[in-house]
Length: 211
Image (cartoon, rainbow, N blue to C red; front, side, top):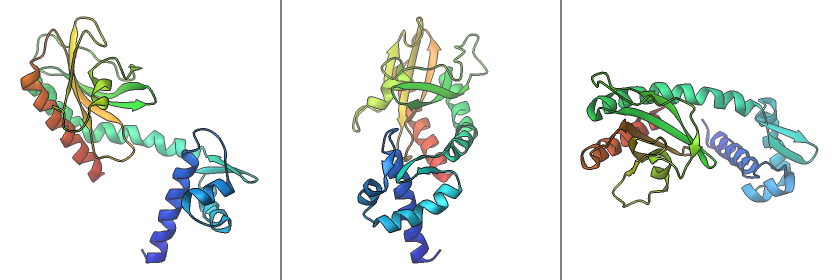
């Protein structure tokens, strides 16, 4: 790709991000021009291919995200599942607990893929799509951890009574707020399982960056 083409792509992506940053409100051409440091004429030119692909919707001088993004988003989760599954399988077998990759959207988090251990007599059935607030359960609390902390969040009785969970954030994947964790009946040995979860979260991040 030529340097000119790279700059056009970069500006187009910046424009799409600026439209998204409007938080549901329609952004004006002037606001978008200011946001990406370009002229109004340049914004109009950049909007043409984005509109043609349904990524943005224009109503006069106002611009919103288009439904084409929904089609793209619909392909993300299946790819995440397949990419993360082998790492989660290894974690579930090591920890003897149900492993999961959970993704946050707004103030809620939900598991998008779960893997149960094969050798335990009993384990937790953690349903994909079971949403709960970020402040409840290890999966969400892991997202609030600061860098430099021990690296994982451990809870008991959340999100289900009688269970315990340990989770670590998936870091270094732009645009993704996610965690990898395990959930089990009874207590988990945090000093043993915690590092395993952190290692798995790093492995998932590496796989996703490769995709």
